[in-house]
Image (tube, rainbow, N blue to C red):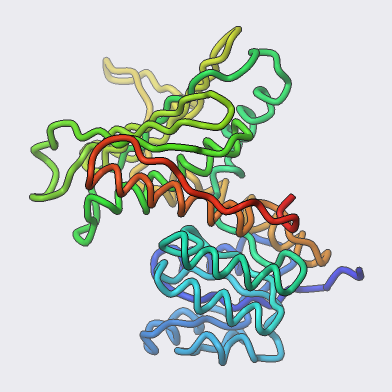
Length: 339
């Protein structure tokens, strides 16, 4: 297929993530331009569109997707709006990058997967950006070489300085641990078969009625265990770390020690304060890879099956959080379209 000269992208959702993607497509990524932005807040959409020459503002995703200069869609709206936007994009046969979650639950993710199968080819990529982080990519490569032997356990730490005011206890699983669900599947090449969520004494720094932190254990069909400490009111910054424990050695990423300073009687470094800062390079790499693949007429990276699997894992996790105990993960048979 002939490579398109410049990809016209409609960005749906202009909140923190969407606005950052508009900036990224306009200032960082090559081979693409922002043709349209969509937000229910018309004034906000117009303000964002005004930053990009030739960009139009819309309040309805369908009107943006119908525009002649839109070749692809980037969905950065809240999760409950994703299913409708994805199905509309499929109706227009437009390639999509959808920020996680694919959809908020497994049933809606399954409907999206069935719609994509009716097209007969992949059209959507899911924004699990950790797969594009330099450290995680090195860990994936190292595990693939077999030098450390078979992976036995993964230890994850996922910490935020403070949770948003709207955050609920289940959202620690569905909005945060969703990343560890995906990266566990990706690093190990296993499916997650069961989830257990344990509830430590809540931190005094957590809002009332928020179960924070939580400790999550994944079991996999390859016999490995993966645990996650999720702590969204740690108070000191944003940290994402992972350690693989294998038969012949271990490997850890996310320590954030790229630069250590010595000054004024102290030594140390800095701690990122949010995900946009910590994973800036990963987002750049992810969006560039999506643009390059889309211009070639291809879809690469994590897809609809990965989004569906993560949603099913998170559903099991929320059940375990609410009801206690070990909860099996229920997946449909993997369709041929997804390998």
